[in-house]
Amino acid sequence: MHNRISHRIYEIVKNIPHCNYFVEIGCDHGYITYLVHLNKIADHIIAADISLPSLRKCQNLFDNDVKNISFVQSDGLKNIPEDKCEVCLMAGLGGAEIIKILQEGYFPKTLVLQPMKDAKKLREYLEQNRYSFIIDKVIKDIKFYDLIVAKKGDEIISLTEMQKSFGVFYYLAQKELIEKLKFKKNNYEAKFNTMPNINKADKLLNEYNLICKFLSENK
Ligand SMILES: C[S@@+](CC[C@H](N)C(=O)[O-])C[C@H]1O[C@@H](n2cnc3c(N)ncnc32)[C@H](O)[C@@H]1O
Image (cartoon, rainbow, N blue to C red):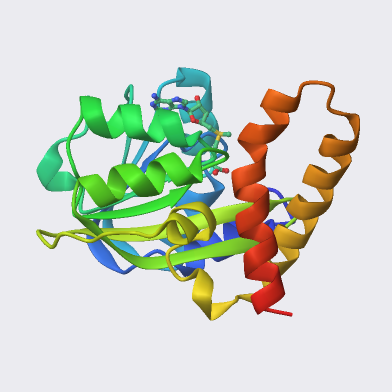
């Protein structure tokens, strides 16, 4: 196993709730699933990946005689029984890919999600499908990542534009969120200076203005 577990992986694992049945969709190298096993976070584990070579990488981390783990080649949730999927982790995939997997599969009771992009779309999708947000925060590693933990319920929630864009608990002004938004603001400003197409710039302006509003309120 790699001798340095990244801060991203450490934070993901730390925020996975203890459960009976844990599934990681897109396990790849297997470090997250391995740490879930090592830390006894789940009684039963399924590591899944669409790619067989990726699945094998994960499987190679474990002793052959380990009893409570299955390795399943699966496109999303397609080969994962719903009653064996209590807490479902999808990390390192795009937000749109995560949405597609849920649309083509089912809604696990608890989702732990670390989308690489399109976090806003993902929050909107979870809102529409009546998930309530337990955790929504920024992880700072080499890059900034969103980490969302959400539970399926019946309650209708209505997120504001700021919550959709920056995280449901943005108003707590997490240090990492402020750093991320300062970084984004600088990037936008650099883009605006070089952008020849005013219509394109207009599209970005909405989020830029929201970022400025948030940062001016959280100095
Ligand atoms: C970047 S790796 C993420 C590994 C690990 N989850 C992490 O966060 O470090 C993405 C993995 O997702 C797998 N993957 C992509 N689409 C998938 C799908 N529809 N179903 C299952 N696995 C998928 C890829 O094969 C790849 O191994």
